[in-house]
Length: 78
Image (cartoon, rainbow, N blue to C red; front, top):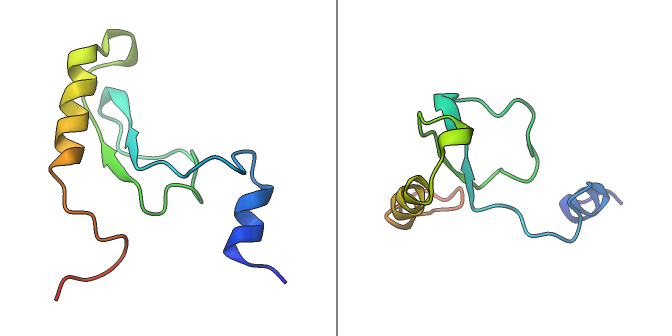
């Protein structure tokens, strides 16, 4: 039987929790096939700063934005 759990277990990230936040630097707003299955319920940040210039302050800003979001995990609000 094929289930979401069996598929997830066969991925190279099997056994690792799915990401809650994906930060894509450089302002690019696409995944480019990065963790397509695993990021189904992830939140995204798209800072315009390029990766070599990404600082701890940029990271803290992304985490603050993430912390202020209401996560629904695919559920609608009533």
